[in-house]
Image (cartoon, rainbow, N blue to C red; front, side, top):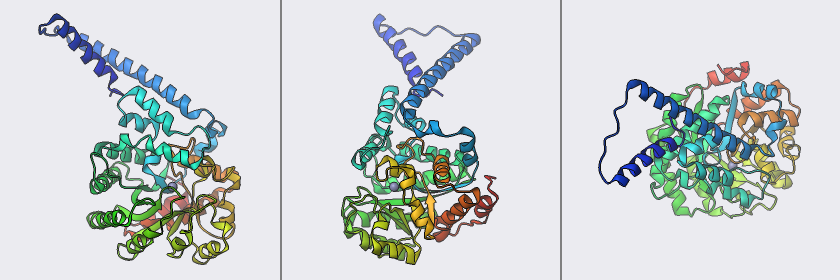
Length: 410
Ligand SMILES: [Zn+2]
């Protein structure tokens, strides 16, 4: 298949131009079977050349300054072959160059989108949030959202993920309302479950800090209906600009857990100057905490995490690329692990942060904190136990536990 449809466009375009010039309709010359084969082979060759050229350009754009070149291929391979759990991945931040090229049908636009989307170096949080905007247009239509979802699931599966919780905040676009957005995602996950049966896939619905109460409540109502129709949505999460105060949404999450049986997780204390609503959210005793990078700077918050043993979702590369920690070794991973708190390893936005696939994140954590394979397997068991699919759905997890224990993907 043509990568961008460019070859097809050029052929059709030049043929029509030729006809118009002469002012009369002319039938194309009859083509023999051999000529047709030759033409198709030439077109395929041209497509392959165009694709190779694009791959090169994309590779160059995204790999400059990336930590990937420091990785030893054989070590990374070991983590690719390890069964892994992903609990914190945003769909709109996880699009690979290959997926973006499927969504954006124009080569130049695709390269521009990737350049705006993928970071080259650590940036301020504000700039990182702008990256998400680069793919807004590409995800406006239901069909594109479906493709993005399935391709992202494919990539996680090919990277050795055996349990995936993807998350996304419903958007009202020119082509979708909130319900269509969520129905498209649920449908795509049901498709992906058939395509990638070796990976369990669930979905967490995002509530943005900037949402008003009525919008969040409306979304929760749709979630309730979809829960009755399928076993896909397992959680609700709070996300968005960490500087925005959002105490008005606390009760939405309490209803989500008590009356909808959903797992709840909040992006909390992501930055040093976190908002005053952090304690209000912590007092609801969430099932997990996203990042929680600066929770340990407040005694009261530390007591709550320790008393209830609330699992932390760690996203190491994300912390470094958003400049919340100066280096992976400075992250809060060790602080919480030393206190017996389950810490899971996650990607956050593998499309935006270079060299942050799930295997690469596992590799970095093992290397930076000098963990043995047995210790990594224990982290994995704890991650699966804190997953919402395990806690809140009736799916069997015996085989998933077996794969982690035997350290095998099959
Ligand atoms: Zn996140």
